[in-house]
Length: 461
Image (cartoon, rainbow, N blue to C red; front, top):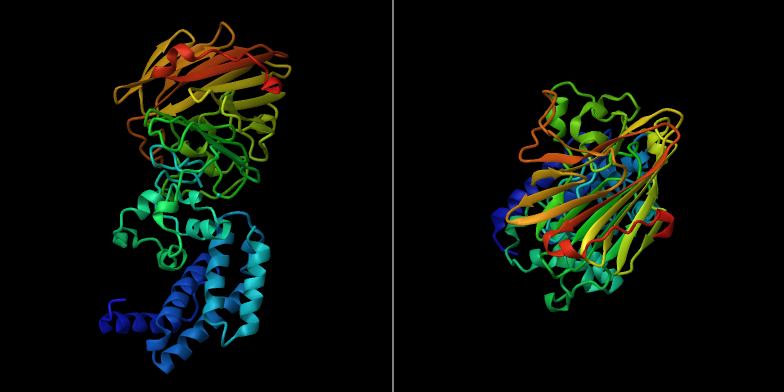
């Protein structure tokens, strides 16, 4: 692109140097996948100007250090995985296979066919940040894969969240995106003028970690956005966040999630952070357990790792978009039943309803959310204020509800700081063998007079 031979020479030197590595670390196959992708791009795009010797060294390395190790069953558990390893590893292998296909057609075809069998959607919020459940972060960036999806589906509207990045024109700020070169392939046939707002304002994905995303508008910066999560703590990168939700309105993230903590900050202190048994050290990390998420905590106990909840019922109707989930298995031994539903009513406010049943012993129910707002408690109510805006919490439930706030300050030296946040909600002591319901409204200030309790069972939603 620049016709400056200095870049060609340096790229060739680097490609040859990594090709002479003894291996690309197959024991941690993400390393192999990412190296294969990088080398494949360099080999394919610079092919005409590489020396014959360099071509031979590089294509051989792609085959021997990339493709072939991906056939070794000792390294390829990711082929049946449903997490990011599947996507990253398959993508790297396919890039490598496509780059050397002319010289090694049989192994290349095998890898590409395998990917079709192995590789089984995103929405940014009005504030531009992501729904950062479990080990996700809030940051967003240009996602080149969405350009491929837009082409494949012939639906430019799926690029609505990418449009603000594409309109910048200066792509140098995206140089940290490893798949950025694909932009020049997948973006060439999609004029920005064709990217219109999506028609759908609701999306639900079922699976090991089901999530449901809904919004009142794509174009209104003050729109209401609700993300609701089911799933299990036992999945890769999972948190004890089952039944949790995230909410934005008036350009503010009122209900937030701390997201992940930097792995090195924990492992450097000797923490074992990837264990998934009930007593794993992972669950002592504050932002990973249920105390720090917008869900229920019973008798100050942890959610059950082996529990799993799916999205049981949902609606895409504008008058009431919602999703419900039976999260009872997350409280096995603590509650007989725990059902939760979350929804946006008339595009104006959020409804969160919980239906619980206690076993033959009393139970203390803790309902909380994390917020960056200032909090003023009332009786079965709270007022949240931030940046000149207001959110009202209104609670319908038993008379012994006690409104509370909880500090988010680190309790252990390994926990990350959580500045300018607080948890707010309530606690309620329930007798044994009791059925009870809690309905919470989260109402932006401009909708204060429009919000009424539904007072309908989740079966009636």
